[in-house]
Length: 565
Picture: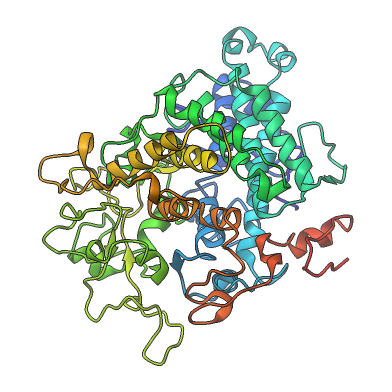
């Protein structure tokens, strides 16, 4: 992995002028051969900066910001290789949600579900970035010990914080392993004790799952209490949320029923109350969403101090083209790239009456379901994602735009950081997902009642329709959106998750859990066919990248993919 797993940390960052963990990320790369531990760790700010890098590795792309030519991943396209942008390609574009017609870096292979171990760079970069983040966490854990703090004269200054620092690093590492478990299955295991020359052992998918689970359980009381950490850093609620997500997927990942545990931890998130549902769904995805209390774990993005062509910059610019800024305030001016459109299956998930964009109602206040945020008003725009000859096309008006991400404030104003880069924080975990997880777990056999599950779903729908307690002056609220028990089913919850969480990379995982990813449920361009075709079940997992098999011949490839060594 060369630059990815850096056991000795000889490429790391010296972080200065850090006003908070994720505030200023002013960094300088260090010479490869220079011993840096004494420089980085001689102050508390140095430790805080390393922790900041553990977090920021999931939203930023390199040392300079703004695709400055010093990317984290050696040989990767810096803009393409940001974590949440990569997740979009693997978790959303390979599903019934979105289309991006480019063939570069393996994108078409992801769109068509035709990847292998060597033909999709974005798959390789996802694998590498997760291990890079694990390496940063391991580095902090090696250096943030009582003994090393004592020897560096920092114990008195850090004794009240170091347990939390370690717990947060262990949480981020557990999160990365949970995603490796989801995406790749059986993968190498590396921790802070792995030697520099030691070849990592490949754990089974079950062992990876159990390791991440054990870490989350072990640190539960070492993470700060709910609401007790600064914004952008996780607390105990994030641990509950991740456990709920892992347990909900345990049957499809490791063939074990853990729905009762999923329900238990999802309910803890809901009942704790520190992260209540936002009063307006649309405000979760704006440039001032750092004030949104629903976000349990937000990856911090700032148009001036944390720039990247990945992150939410991608989720705005790739989803709009230049002319759209003349129809509503995108917050990026004419800088839209015009890449991503909604597939027909996503559009059709909503009531047809809610889909159309009204130039006189750019926020969709007159819609029933306020989550139906599409652009349909460009000249000659059609819902179909193919041209007049039924072929794949890069023409942006073949397909509807999806516009829930806007680089403006809730008052529809451009933020102080301007429109060159976005300032929308990425809501990696948010409470609405916990409501839907709890409801699904009940329907799959957890000991909650059907009435309780219905209440969770109807709470999400009431917020989406802005009815009842979510009603607001000037916004339509005459349709409640609530359903009856006779309408509640697992299929209904899957549809509700699509509407609530579209572009928040969960869709592939959801479809696999519901048995609707590879077969019996098709969409635009699946297997390269215009209306979609079934694919081999091997595509439920991504392959271990060919480069990793070459570097470590002991690795076993996932079933169905070619073993090259």
